[in-house]
View 1 (cartoon, rainbow, N blue to C red):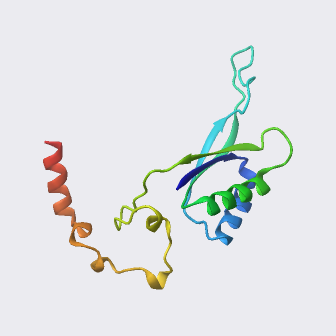
View 2: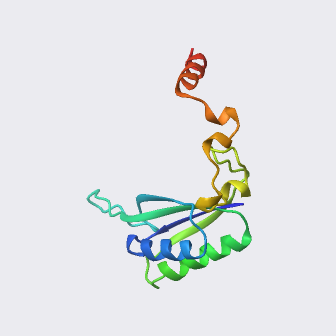
Length: 142
């Protein structure tokens, strides 16, 4: 599994998201960021010149999806000018879907609405009520 992180121009975001969704890659985090890809962002008078961009974080289950996501980002964000952005890949050791307890590739799959389980089908541990949660939380903090 991989974490693909990309910093791209804001104007590219909708095209990237649309193409990722068309290929079945839907789980991601989008953040507003500021930065500069090279030196020269601090002027002699002390003012900074940082670009406002978007950062995408996408956890992918394997090489096929990693390469597909990279190509989608590349094809939508590359404009042959400086400031097109950067992307990098890091290995992910484990992923857990908090709601269900699914791990790794299972946690990355998105079931169709008809395939989703009702909350009553999850183990009791996953159906903790507010009072139980508060009691557990209190005992940990004391």
